[in-house]
Image (cartoon, rainbow, N blue to C red; front, side, top):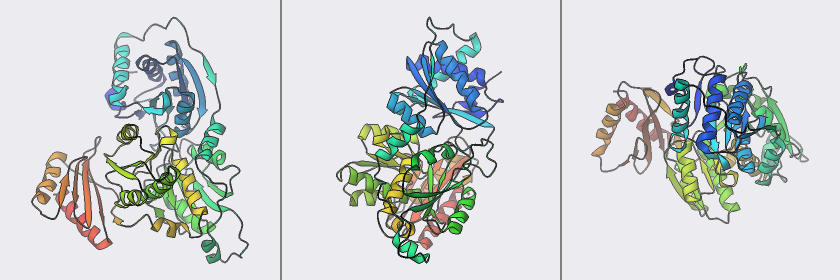
Length: 471
């Protein structure tokens, strides 16, 4: 095939339409290039449930063995299960998934041994250059030694490792919630949790992780189906939470969880069926991780998480560290600062005890343990961590990102009551509100996030900023 690698090699991964933009022949070259760039003598490879994933993963493994590397194939897995294998086996890894993208897409998330990320600045550019060279001149000759392929099931070990990091043995339903539902005083000693796997890899990992725990699981869309017959596996879009919210109310459940396609992100819904802000989850987990680490440690948060996050971190003895948006920045800062935890607005949660990698499943266990360790319903519990009113992310299509961003800067630069910073786009901060505007790297968009102490102020700030952005 004729491949334009500039279209499929992104900042942090490989992603494109199969077979239009890439196929198994190209996956084999990526496998060979990955081994050559990392110098690895062995690698671990896993894949999601998309129809094209097993073939692409197998081709990648073949390319790796032709360059002399031994391959451990772990088969069907979530992305954080691949990170577990990379960390536990101390091997570079390749995960075949397109996360929440539609069925016709697929991709590769790459990491070095210990789940260290591979992006443009950490090897992905060199991998692309090698693949382009081989596309022009022909594939490289096989190495003197052909590597072996070994199959290994890591699901049980992955689940056990996660459960070892959170004490979930004593969780129980919130008494106030069960009394409000009319249950008798001898309410069942189980949290009732509805989980929407979106036909993605959560259907594979959730039963293993929750097995044996005092939880009543109500599964939704656990059948592995990479065509996503029920809804897109992207819980960041509110439309894809509609079924879960309805089911939580119908079941009178204690909470709901939704996972994206490769099950590395987790979204939470309270007992009323209302979505819980990922910033509130970040703050809740940060408090728990600080307690585990003796009330000391750095907590990473990107600059569009709520003001609640650094406040809670300081209240619990920790040191908040603010970063740009994007997992490569979070992971780099985790490693640099020795942070114990990090969270993003997009429901990516990073743990020092998980090789600084992101795992929504571990965040979900923290939520279950926190809820089951006290008597209030989830809505009351998270209210402690959800102190401000936010706009959510609002995208505006613009003809000239630079010009519109400059217009926003000009509008606020002369005001004495605000400060401006340009860590990532432009952040304007006042005593009672802030907003950030940053350009998309891949589309002609500006992304706005605003927050204030009350809804009316937030709406005013949001609308003023949007009027300037949209010109």
